[in-house]
Image (cartoon, rainbow, N blue to C red; front, top):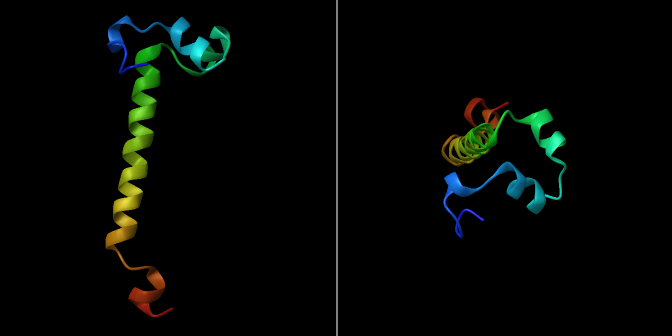
Length: 66
């Protein structure tokens, strides 16, 4: 949806319709669409850090010969 429209024009109603979720359920988890965006960004960032760190650092077993 973000490719079709800019973020500012997307409503919570649009998001919940695409996600087949009730708006009350959305608001039980997120304050607004900005909070959803922040959570998604932070989860993506955390996953990226985990992937990057696991590629660079040898496991504890290899490092310490456990």
